[in-house]
Length: 298
Image 1 (cartoon, one colour):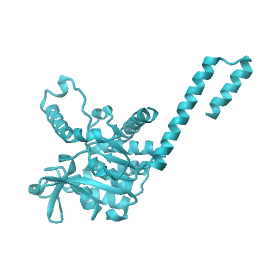
Image 2 (image 1 turned 90 degrees about the vertical axis):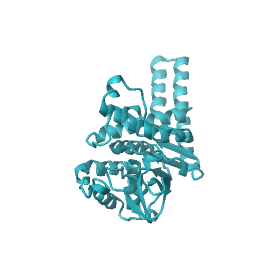
Image 3 (image 1 turned 90 degrees about the horizontal axis):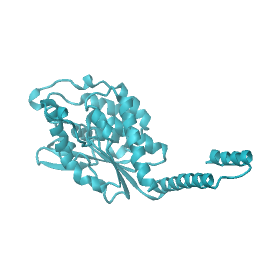
Image 4 (image 1 turned 60 degrees about the vertical axis):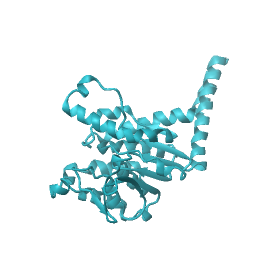
């Protein structure tokens, strides 16, 4: 805004007069900028903010872009919920890692190392490599050691219920939240077997209610209209079926969010490859910028 004031002074000095329309337009821009800054500061200092990070495989890198945008604008969620990919990013964030640090960790990871095949009757592989990455990043395998409150949704295979866990072994719970049935082994915790929380609640907003004043939800599986060629063949039909089934448990939670971020560009990226890490990061960043700006300016 200092640059604008100087430019206005330059216009006056050069022309010897002031264009009223120019002044009105300029002051309007300045007013909007100041108002936005005040709202952002108010969110940070007066409201307890929570963020919910959905599952979505490799698209989870977009979560990091969202967190980077929040970091740059001095918005610091105090309570985090998530599942699957969202539980991984949520665990690192709750442990105190900066978004750009997380991005470097993810870019150095190698998916093939996670595919260490075991007894196929319990799942094709386990998540030993994921546990190693997390332990290197967070150091202590305990929810209690985290700097922020973290709540993770998991599916109890024995009871058929969704559960929201926030204590005990962090690695066990995150591994369970990422254990897609058949592909990965379920994880035994306190006598029950647990699997991917996305089966029952892929956008776990509910555990944030009553704990925070403002909820930001980030959904990695947006549902958008698709052309015939994307749905009429087996591969496309299978993926569409999966996305719609997940969205069915996400949809009721969307109205619970004060800000809902679901970048449509994510449909252009798969859920397995982390090669387009920078692009996914940017999709998340731009998605946060678009939605937060809309809400805050309004």
